[in-house]
Image (cartoon, rainbow, N blue to C red):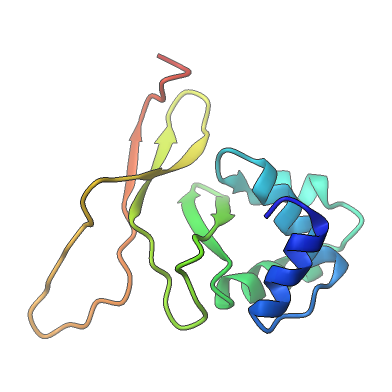
Length: 138
C-alpha cells in the first residue's frame, strides 16, 4: 500500500475519504519498518496542525487501518493494521517489541495466537508488549 493511488483506493474501500493528510500519514507509516512515535509523525507532517493530525489518527484507528503499537512514557507509537482488521474488529496476531536501547517499536508476528480467557468477561482485543534489546542493538 505504498503508492498514493493504492492508498486512496484502500481508504475508499474502507468507506473513508482520501484526504491529503490521510494519504500522507498512510504513506509515511507504510514506508516504515517499525511503529512510529507521534512526535516523528508530527515532524514529518508539519504542514498539518496537531489537532487535525490527532483526529486523523483516531479516524484511521476507528476504521481498522492504524493501531496503537505502544505507549511509552509520554510517547504513543502507531503502525498500520493488517488487512484483516476492520472497523468492528482489530485482529492483531502479533506482539509489540520495544527496544530499550534504540526505542524502536516493532510489530512481530508470532506462530501461535495469544489466547486468553477470563470467566465472565468478553475479551475483544489483546495487546502484548515485550521490552528488551532488538537484534540491531545486540
